[in-house]
Length: 145
Image (cartoon, rainbow, N blue to C red):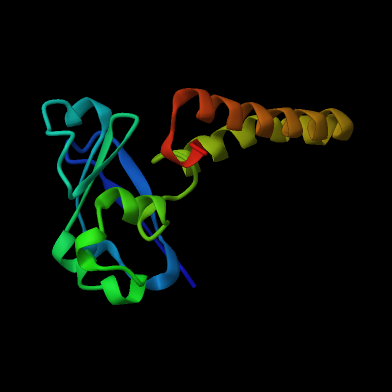
Protein backbone atom coordinates (compact mmCIF):
# COMPACT_ATOMS: atom_id res chain seq x y z
CA UNK A 1 0.00 0.00 0.00
CA UNK A 2 1.20 3.53 -0.75
CA UNK A 3 0.93 6.60 1.42
CA UNK A 4 0.04 10.23 0.77
CA UNK A 5 0.65 13.39 2.73
CA UNK A 6 -0.78 16.92 2.63
CA UNK A 7 2.06 19.46 2.82
CA UNK A 8 1.63 23.24 3.20
CA UNK A 9 3.81 25.56 1.16
CA UNK A 10 6.47 27.57 2.99
CA UNK A 11 4.36 30.74 2.59
CA UNK A 12 1.31 29.00 4.04
CA UNK A 13 -0.98 30.16 1.23
CA UNK A 14 -1.06 26.95 -0.82
CA UNK A 15 -0.45 23.27 -0.29
CA UNK A 16 0.18 20.07 -2.18
CA UNK A 17 -0.82 16.47 -1.85
CA UNK A 18 2.23 14.23 -2.11
CA UNK A 19 2.22 10.57 -3.04
CA UNK A 20 4.84 8.20 -1.64
CA UNK A 21 4.95 5.31 -4.06
CA UNK A 22 6.27 1.85 -3.41
CA UNK A 23 6.24 2.41 0.38
CA UNK A 24 9.93 3.29 0.52
CA UNK A 25 10.02 6.96 1.51
CA UNK A 26 7.74 9.10 3.67
CA UNK A 27 7.26 12.75 4.62
CA UNK A 28 10.58 12.81 6.50
CA UNK A 29 12.31 12.77 3.10
CA UNK A 30 10.65 16.07 2.15
CA UNK A 31 12.23 19.27 3.41
CA UNK A 32 10.28 22.06 1.72
CA UNK A 33 7.48 22.90 -0.66
CA UNK A 34 7.37 26.27 -2.38
CA UNK A 35 4.45 27.36 -4.57
CA UNK A 36 5.09 29.46 -7.70
CA UNK A 37 4.57 32.67 -5.73
CA UNK A 38 7.25 31.92 -3.13
CA UNK A 39 9.70 29.86 -5.23
CA UNK A 40 11.05 32.81 -7.18
CA UNK A 41 14.60 33.68 -6.28
CA UNK A 42 15.53 30.08 -5.45
CA UNK A 43 18.28 28.33 -7.39
CA UNK A 44 16.64 26.16 -10.06
CA UNK A 45 19.75 23.99 -10.35
CA UNK A 46 19.80 22.54 -6.83
CA UNK A 47 20.28 18.77 -7.01
CA UNK A 48 17.97 18.22 -4.04
CA UNK A 49 15.07 20.06 -5.69
CA UNK A 50 12.58 19.23 -8.40
CA UNK A 51 10.70 21.97 -10.23
CA UNK A 52 7.29 21.58 -11.81
CA UNK A 53 5.53 24.61 -13.30
CA UNK A 54 7.00 26.95 -10.72
CA UNK A 55 6.39 24.60 -7.80
CA UNK A 56 9.57 23.65 -5.96
CA UNK A 57 9.86 20.44 -3.92
CA UNK A 58 13.07 19.94 -1.93
CA UNK A 59 14.10 16.54 -0.56
CA UNK A 60 16.44 15.46 2.21
CA UNK A 61 18.85 13.70 -0.10
CA UNK A 62 20.68 11.97 2.78
CA UNK A 63 17.46 10.13 3.62
CA UNK A 64 16.64 9.53 -0.05
CA UNK A 65 20.10 8.20 -0.89
CA UNK A 66 20.09 5.89 2.13
CA UNK A 67 17.50 3.87 0.17
CA UNK A 68 19.61 3.57 -2.99
CA UNK A 69 19.90 -0.20 -2.72
CA UNK A 70 16.11 -0.47 -2.48
CA UNK A 71 15.82 1.60 -5.66
CA UNK A 72 18.41 -0.60 -7.35
CA UNK A 73 20.68 2.31 -8.30
CA UNK A 74 23.89 3.87 -7.03
CA UNK A 75 23.37 6.65 -4.49
CA UNK A 76 25.41 9.00 -6.66
CA UNK A 77 22.94 8.56 -9.52
CA UNK A 78 19.90 9.61 -7.50
CA UNK A 79 18.56 13.10 -8.08
CA UNK A 80 15.43 14.84 -6.87
CA UNK A 81 14.06 14.70 -10.41
CA UNK A 82 14.64 10.94 -10.57
CA UNK A 83 12.82 10.40 -7.24
CA UNK A 84 9.87 12.49 -8.45
CA UNK A 85 9.69 11.05 -11.97
CA UNK A 86 9.98 7.44 -10.74
CA UNK A 87 7.01 8.02 -8.43
CA UNK A 88 8.79 7.59 -5.10
CA UNK A 89 7.70 11.09 -4.04
CA UNK A 90 5.39 12.88 -6.44
CA UNK A 91 2.09 14.73 -6.66
CA UNK A 92 -1.13 12.90 -5.99
CA UNK A 93 -2.49 13.26 -9.50
CA UNK A 94 -0.91 15.47 -12.14
CA UNK A 95 -0.53 18.75 -10.21
CA UNK A 96 0.17 19.65 -6.58
CA UNK A 97 -3.47 20.68 -6.08
CA UNK A 98 -5.05 18.03 -8.32
CA UNK A 99 -7.28 16.43 -5.68
CA UNK A 100 -8.99 19.69 -4.79
CA UNK A 101 -9.37 20.89 -8.38
CA UNK A 102 -10.56 17.50 -9.62
CA UNK A 103 -13.17 17.22 -6.88
CA UNK A 104 -14.39 20.77 -7.45
CA UNK A 105 -14.68 20.26 -11.21
CA UNK A 106 -16.45 16.91 -10.83
CA UNK A 107 -18.89 18.32 -8.33
CA UNK A 108 -19.95 20.95 -10.87
CA UNK A 109 -20.89 18.13 -13.27
CA UNK A 110 -22.77 16.07 -10.66
CA UNK A 111 -25.94 18.16 -10.93
CA UNK A 112 -26.21 17.16 -14.59
CA UNK A 113 -26.23 13.47 -13.59
CA UNK A 114 -29.52 13.99 -11.76
CA UNK A 115 -31.28 15.49 -14.78
CA UNK A 116 -29.70 13.99 -17.92
CA UNK A 117 -27.53 10.89 -17.55
CA UNK A 118 -26.43 10.81 -21.20
CA UNK A 119 -25.40 14.44 -21.12
CA UNK A 120 -23.59 13.80 -17.83
CA UNK A 121 -21.61 10.88 -19.27
CA UNK A 122 -20.69 12.93 -22.35
CA UNK A 123 -19.68 15.87 -20.16
CA UNK A 124 -17.52 13.62 -17.95
CA UNK A 125 -15.80 12.15 -20.99
CA UNK A 126 -15.16 15.62 -22.44
CA UNK A 127 -14.00 16.90 -19.06
CA UNK A 128 -11.47 14.08 -18.67
CA UNK A 129 -10.03 14.54 -22.14
CA UNK A 130 -9.97 18.32 -21.81
CA UNK A 131 -8.33 18.11 -18.42
CA UNK A 132 -5.50 15.95 -19.72
CA UNK A 133 -4.97 18.25 -22.69
CA UNK A 134 -4.94 21.31 -20.41
CA UNK A 135 -2.33 19.72 -18.13
CA UNK A 136 -0.23 18.71 -21.10
CA UNK A 137 -0.45 22.21 -22.61
CA UNK A 138 0.55 23.70 -19.24
CA UNK A 139 3.68 21.52 -19.21
CA UNK A 140 3.24 19.52 -16.00
CA UNK A 141 6.05 16.95 -15.51
CA UNK A 142 3.73 13.96 -15.32
CA UNK A 143 2.31 14.80 -18.74
CA UNK A 144 5.68 14.70 -20.46
CA UNK A 145 6.36 11.67 -22.64
